[in-house]
Length: 175
Image 1 (tube, rainbow, N blue to C red):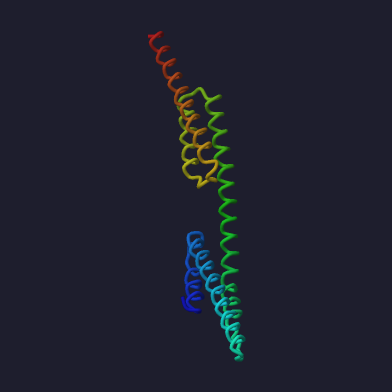
Image 2 (image 1 turned 90 degrees about the vertical axis):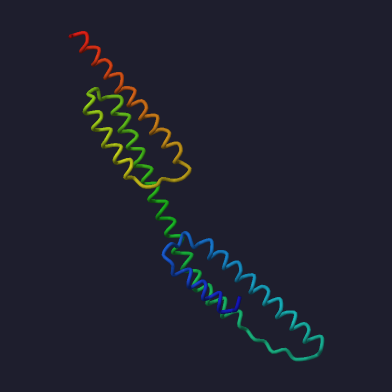
């Protein structure tokens, strides 16, 4: 890559909307840039040693420092914005986890306390709609939370089936 190509590629990537998705590409570009700078420095040192061995004067052209400063003046703010975005996503996921745990507790209460089938189904429907509306939760908790919720749904429908059977039995007995 040319010297300016790194800067142009970085500017193009950092101006995109999805900073999370672009993060890997930007990190790879930074790695390539650092490799390029190391190689340029190595070539500069070789040329300087060669000139000393031949007794010639070596003119120093320092284009590396301004290039590095410009690159990192763009990379630094990008990194901070991306970090802030990731932190806000984590906070949102933690809040969603708290909401889903509250919904699980509400469903437990419905299972334990509600004996009227109509009221229980109305509360179940309300809880289920809220559950679907809540966004993502941390990945490491998804499986456990979903398992708890599914197990409670099975218990809920089992209890509703039992209540229905008892009700049908009472109707048959009283008929």
